[in-house]
Length: 261
Length: 308
Ligand SMILES: Nc1ncnc2c1ncn2[C@@H]1O[C@H](COP(=O)(O)OP(=O)(O)OP(=O)(O)O)[C@@H](O)[C@H]1O
Ligand SMILES: [Mg+2]
Image (cartoon, each protein chain N blue to C red):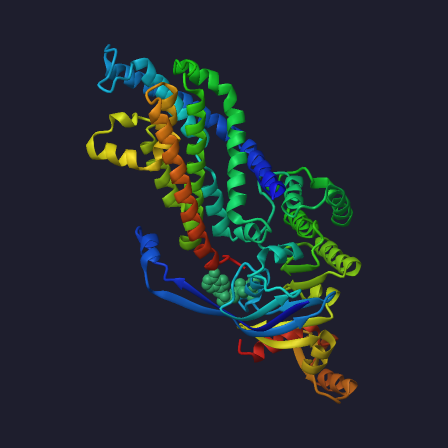
């Protein structure tokens, strides 16, 4: 059971490394984005020490850098891979393996993320510096919320892969997902700034666990009981998504068509 | 080894709407389009056979192969492969079959060939020693050494196909489904692929179901063919029997002095010298030849009679 998944993870990693130049470009974009956000938010604060939410400018800048770094590192590739393979009928081979389709995809994603982190490593000091990030007081809370958030993100992207078996077309859904997930993850604006209904919505959706929650834990904006509560809700999301995935996959499996002949 | 009974597949897809909201409407619609791709096909194949599964474009060959592998669920009918129902016992069936689709590849496009082969070794949990042995055999038989470390996207079609054959056979499956494994290959590459298939069948008693539009593949490899059209079996039996039973008449082809070519059918029992004498008397001829019926003319005739 382990060996097939390790094999898929290795291919995911190699796949990521094969697109080295893409990653370098995105890292440049990432650093630029963090830099721009820093300029905008510094101007918005206009010399004030604190915002109404009690976040210092320094903490906010650290938050933005981290949230973007996280969102970048955890953006899933598998919806794109699955979309391509379903459209071309190559998914035939994924389905003809003795290992399940979803575990294969999840393992590929894990390897791909690992490859991304490997290449991101040289950029981390730059982002940390630009974002003036200092060591956190909640390393365990940070690691836990982030790891669980990553699992949620992978499961959501598996959901998109499964939807592809119905629609045979997920390019639009993937793009929408990317947009919505980054926005509600709070990569531009911390969730605590979202007004009224938008704030309620952002709080209810699971996207915050990929950006806002871990980053807020890191900078100390969330602490103590809030961390424990976040972890509990994340575990709940994972259980719910697992059930949903299982049910949807059973149905998708039956309606598989392999395009082209 | 393989038993198929009254196998039928009707594709029933939600009607595909076009336009910007098309995908959404397709998702919600109750309108369906139906198409019967395989229509009551039955056959049996014993272990160690190489069977040509032939038919014109759209006959339902690939659809049958997809059902044999267990990926596609039949609308009705029965398949048993080595005592298993493929779509119910997918995992065990997966370990027992290797598949090559000439039109698509199982190799990872952006990675060196060897990476995809290693992945296959991992996915099927092939012990390291056996993997090395298998790989060495594939490298020799399919001349993989030149491009083992080349990204698949840089391979020529023939090289890629050889890579795909290797991937399908690395875990020594007792059954091989080959759907157009020689499509687009040059004569040499076709020869290499045919030899590989023959060798695999001979050494491992691998059962092979071969789909192809190149009848030379069939003549080189198969003793038996199953001919289908519009999802139904037209013929199932030996190639020799088929040629005898359906053989069209031999033909006399003459090239006239004014570059025109004329064909005369030679009726059973007709004297060929007499026919030639008669033709030369009427036309000034430059060259003549006699065409023997071959598998191609036989199959063309069967397709024509089945209403094409
Ligand atoms: N996913 C699908 N949805 C709807 N119809 C399909 C689908 N796949 C195949 N068909 C139809 O089923 C029929 C049989 O297709 P199939 O691919 O099995 O033909 P084939 O014998 O392999 O032909 P070829 O020699 O051209 O490869 C065709 O009429 C095709 O249009
Ligand atoms: Mg076909």
